[in-house]
Image (cartoon, rainbow, N blue to C red; front, side, top):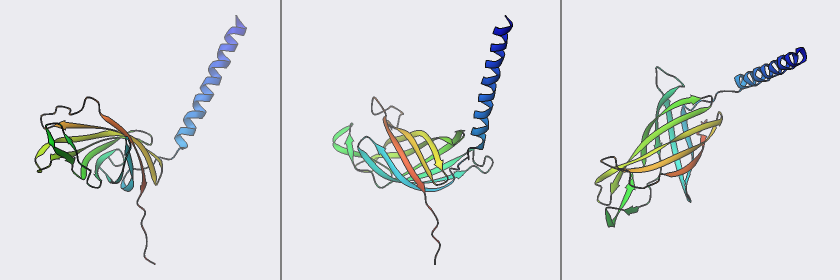
Amino acid sequence: MNIGRTLLTLASLGLLVAVSVGAAAAQNEPVYKMEGAWHGIVTVGMMLTPSLDTFTSDAQRQGVEGTFLCTIPAVGKMPNPANPSGWLAVSPSGHGNWVRIGKNRYAFTALRSLFDEIGKPVGWAKYWGTITPISDNEYTGTMTVQYYLLNGTAMFPQPFTGTMHSNRIEITLEQ
């Protein structure tokens, strides 16, 4: 009985030490900021799109939440489900919000305008996902995209998924 109790105590003590060492290592891991200007590539399916993103913090919650602006080149035309002879496109700029959800992990949601071939508003393109900074100057992430009509109805049965990889835009000093 004493041997069983001793083994249980030693196992519990070993587990406590392992958890403490792991927690200490995690505390020493640097925290990377999202604030700033970034350039990168977004991949959805086979489509690669250059992206420019600017993240700013909420003044009351620095480093915890904020807004962002995402700019991409004009996206190519896609078929308009409501008008087979027409097309749809999304606006080149997207506006959204972000929030820190863990150490070096952020969630975001952004919207772009969706319009038809004559510029008539058709709905919204919604983008959401997570970003993981892997250094002060680089992040990776995942993204989900869905298109919605103005009344909120999803245009496609399943959203599209993709990945992101960006680098901070570094300052170049004049010589």
